[in-house]
Image: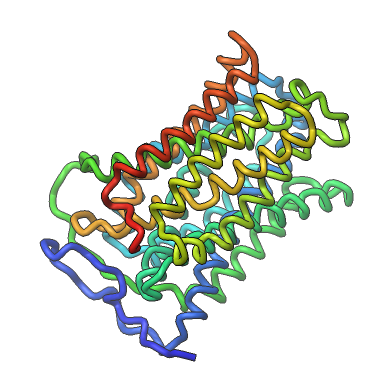
Length: 408
C-alpha cells in the first residue's frame, strides 16, 4: 500500500494569500485510511439528517402541527443553511476544514437531540434554524475535505463521498423504522445517533486532511462570485431542484398521478434513491472512462428523459423506470460541481464551495414550492415537465462551462 505523509500543505491555496502551516505534520498514514475517514464523516452527517427526517411525522403529531405549520417550520432549516454559507466559508478558510469539522460534527448531532426536546412550535423553529446553521458548517468543511482528498489521489473520488451520504440516508431511515416499532421516542433515538456520531468523530478526526490556515484580507463577508462559480452554482441549482422534486413530491406523484396502490406509493422514491446511491458509487469510474464533461452532459439528458417518461406515461412500470433514470442523472452532478469549485485557483476552497452551495441550494429550497404552485394552477404532471427542462438546461450549460473538462 502506498504511504504518504499528510502535511499541512495538502490543500492548495491561492499564491496571493499569505499562508501559515496549520499545526505539526500528521503521522504517516495511507491515502486509503484518509479516504475512509472522510467517507465516514459524510456518513455521520447523513445519518444525523436522515434520523431527523425519519421522525418528522412523530414530532408533527406530538406538537399537534397542521400541514401548513409543519411546512412553515421546515423552512427554518434551509434558511439557517443559507444565512451562514458566507460565514462557513470564511471559518473553514481561517481555521481549516479539519478543525471546523471536528467541532461542528458532534455539535450537529447534539443539536439533533434538542429537536427531540422541542415542546412548542417556536422551540422547534429555533432548533431547526440552529440545526441548519451547524449543518451548513459541516457541509462546507466536509466538502472541503473531499476536495483535498481528491487532490491527494489525483483523480475523481468525490462522488463516492456523496455515495456514503446517500447510504447513510438508507441507514437512518431503517434505524428510524426500528425505533418507531420499538416505541422509542425521538429524544432517546437522537441520543443514540449522537453517541455514534461522537464516536465516529473521535476515531476518525486524526485522519482528516491537514490544510493551511490563511490570514483573510480585510474584506466584506460577502464576496461577489466570479462567472465560473456562478455557472457551477446554476448547474447545481437545476440538479437540486430535480432532487427536491423527488424527495418531496415523488410519493404524491405516485399516489395522485400514477394512481399506485397504497403499498406501492413509496416505490418511486425508493427507486430514485437506490439509483442515485448506485450512480454515486460508480460515478468516479465513469468520470475516468468518459470524462467529467461528457458524464454531466449525459446526466442532464437522463434527468430530462426520466422526467419526460414519467410525465408522458404515468403508470407504475414506466414511472418507476423514469424515476430510476432521474436518480442516475442527479447522482454525479453536485459532487462534480463541488469538485470543480474546490479547484478554483483564485479563491480558497472553503469560500468557493460556500459560494456555489449558496446558489445550488436555492434549487432545493425553491424547487418543491414551485412544483406546488404549478400543480395548483395546472397539474402535477406539468410541474414535473418543467423540472424535466432543468435537465436539458444542465446539458446545455455544462457544454458552455469551460472549468468542467473531460481531462479532470
